[in-house]
Image 1 (tube, rainbow, N blue to C red):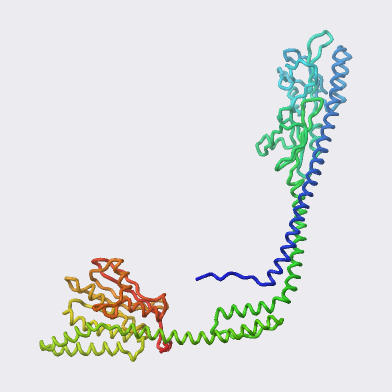
Image 2 (tube, rainbow, N blue to C red; image 1 turned 60 degrees about the vertical axis):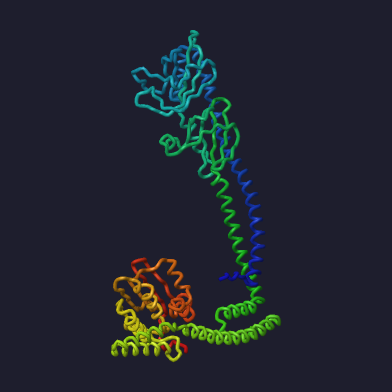
Length: 566
């Protein structure tokens, strides 16, 4: 069956057209706006990141420059030596709270002297060589990574060590180390943020982490920071914006990290959400106005289309009501009304002709009674009379008369299942006489099924086939079982025999074979009559196994006498 193409109404076309134009124009405008807005937000985010990093860079450069001046001052006093040097250094560590200690070392790294604000040195030998660069031969300022001061008893501040080599008053090699609390540097970094979640941190020239606001999370493995090896500048990546500045007076680099989602994407998303809400409101307003406007013109056409669809679904019971509207719609309505009346008359004519043709076909099928059956039955009756078996001959004549009376059935195609069973029993009684009791048979019929109707002469051709092709060719006694029962909205007939059986090909052929001289009305005849009368869903199916037997199943709908149209 060919699928009917799906159609769309004029009003919907108009609405979709208006909405499409508005939607397309709005989407183009939104995309252009988002592109421009995103570029603007990206520039703003880069500027904000650069400003934050530049602020920290200036703070650290000022601080390290001040430490250089302090170191120059200390070195100058080291060259003076004596009590004057001792007094200066001791007073210096008391005044500068950010300086934890000043220490001096010889070429081998042994601690020579230490100045602090009343702190007690540990009694055992203390090594500090991991933070004081003893291999450096230049006289530039060396700044270590932040570490815990370990020189003093019960005092472990977090410091950074600034060291530089020089010579004492006697001209001996000496390296001066200045331990400065790192909290000032850390506070300067922690107090500068980029957006709500952005931050800055310090690395050396190789990208090794020196300080990070979330250092504990990084060391514990909860957070992972990308190792930056960028040159100075700003780099926009998929998830983050990195800004890198190097300090001029030491090997430190400031890295600022801001998130694209926060600085750019979220703002673009918020702006897009507002625009989409506005677009939705415009689309709703456009669709509403379009629907109101188009409905004024398309409503009569829609009513006429619905009437045509209703006529298509149920042409016989359809009653057409004129559709009001423009002149063109009224003309279409009148033409359609005339067409409906004409088609309904033609349908009634065709229906009557089909009923007449169907009855003619059924009568032609019923007329195919095998004359050999009548001849053989009369010959058997004559033989019984010659043998003096008058009672058997009388019983056989009575069965033959009942068989033909039911076969005629006043010209009706449908008879009750009760009469069809009587017809089958009469036929089996005659055949049992003819085949000299070569088989036995039994009936199992649900009493509730007896009042339903079925095609007449339905069981006899099936039983004939079971006798002739099944049990007649057996050396032993054959058996035929007829069972009639109901299932849901169907009546089911099952005819089983224990004969020689058939192949699948033979089962298919027997449903396609026309009746011949020895096959009576034939199974194909029965199947055709059932399908002509009830439809293709009903009919005969055959299952068979060689040397096992055959089972024929007939399906018919449940029909009562009151439902039968003569």
